[in-house]
Image (cartoon, rainbow, N blue to C red; front, side, top):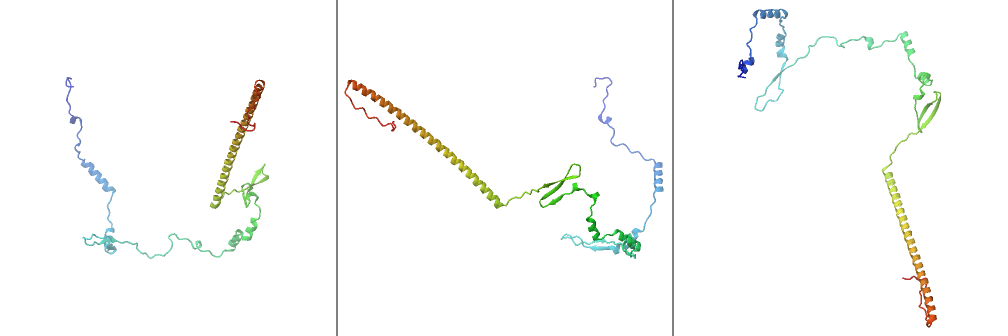
Length: 264
């Protein structure tokens, strides 16, 4: 920066403006004009309320001990000013008065009595009118008749002249007693145990029949095998006897086991 020919050093305080600028003195003529206008617009008046309050202050003030003082301090008395509205001699009554006819009724005239009789109706007439149909107020599709057997609904069929009656029973869900529920639970458990026992017995019976059938088949095979062995032994003995008869003295053949006995 200092290498430039026209460079100049500027301090920071020269860039910032002073924080406090000197106050300008007010114009005395303008101040006098404003004061004159204020005095012309507002006036000051004094009242006698302060004097009256001072006169009645002794009568309306009462000294009471409201708050407990500390143990090391003397008791202090507080003054309370009691004010009440002044009692004026006036006629008692409501603030907004109404005429006497609003609260009390005089004897009706002949015209008023005739109007009352024309507008009034007795109980007998009410009962008679209740039995008469009202065609303009009859809405049968909006009426529900509840009977002990259930709720009856009239359903509109066709174009409004043919009515069909539908019986709808009311289903009420009732919970059984604890004793009944325990009995039902025991009954279901007994039926389940009985069913499982029957299934077990049926399975054991099937296994026994299968074992019996297997044993019979084994016995049949053994008998058949023994019979075949006896037959072969008999055939072999006859051949030996024929050979001995031709070239040697006759010898008694060996005893063969019976055919019915199994051989091992």
